[in-house]
Image 1 (cartoon, rainbow, N blue to C red):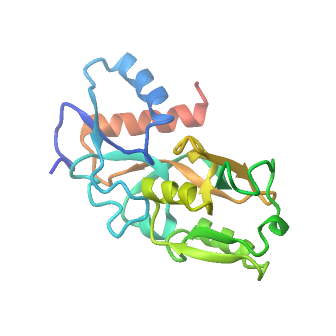
Image 2: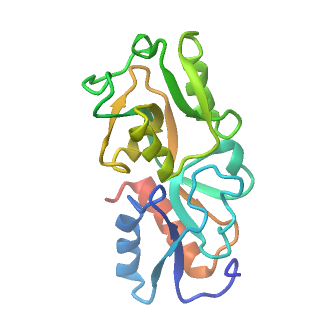
Length: 215
């Protein structure tokens, strides 16, 4: 257990879908004034997004990680700092008929099957589902969670998958295309309720920098 302990390092969970995209810009500035701080990246064992135990390692193997805020899964189980709102898009392979589109309208998805996170995990994913369901000819296939195999299956089976635009670099053979109707999901820092003193200083410093927009 590292939750609430006095630690010489700040452990940050990371995986392909929870890579540190914005956090390094913050921790570099914090370390400039706290040179005794040490950041350690920890590979997340349960790297699937929205698996059955998405926060199993939080407060144990690591104290924070960067990613999507899944409102129904995470509420009351962790703390969250929002870095930005990220829009949803579709991901398709080079062989899909929609590949050359620059924007996706509901009419483009008629008679198509769309892969989407199952209802009840995130109010933001659910809002997108509600939008898609206004077109009865769009077929929705539920995903229990997202992991790298989900992206590979999308490519190999020439499927359409709903993802946040910030994941556009996850799979090199998939193209992310924005939706005409912009629906977003919060993206930021998920962190444990109880932190060591150094991790708490990092969190409070990030809050100040976000408020002041100092970088």
